[in-house]
Image 1 (cartoon, rainbow, N blue to C red):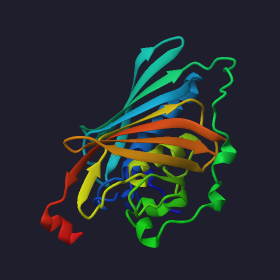
Image 2: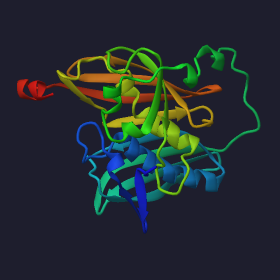
Image 3: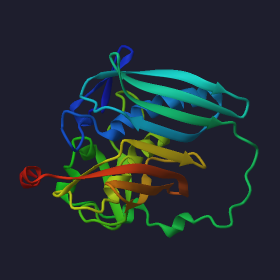
Length: 266
């Protein structure tokens, strides 16, 4: 199966499989965030620290080009480190990830309110989305989806298992962290609450907070969106694996009504 990115020296060249929903020539947000998370994970493994927070600021649309990642240690502490990874298109910064890493301790207190994994249906018990929904983007066509609540094509909260089947980077396996990050970007789509023929919506940033490392290749997104004033909204989601929840996601949303010409064309 073709990869989302191909190594090109120190760069990573996006393939056609990286194309997003708004234009096949622009990167899916999942591809952008996962490529930055790949560098964070490499640095976390080298340090022996755990990834606790990932905040992505997506500043500019990214075309199907070759990118480099530039990492910088902002804080080097004994119990916590802060990293910065910039995604570069030549001299232009496309986006940035700020990551919090913490030193693991010996044990954790018991959580009496933890939701058991058995509360959610397994991906094998879920249903695939309609074929037209799977064609929302070239990238999404490489993601296996199994819905256990709600529907992707209808407004409202939903819960869906997702798994990226294509390698993010050619020749490399997709780690559980990469699966989690790429799935998280779909939270606003899973929980969309508007008719997309009348409205557009974007998330210029996304933050993930991990309370344990994810395991396996399947990631469950349980998401909901709220709308406020002046086009502002907020999507929140819980990410789970087969053992149960492991992270929370927050996305700042921006809604904009399509003009009549756009609505008719769509």
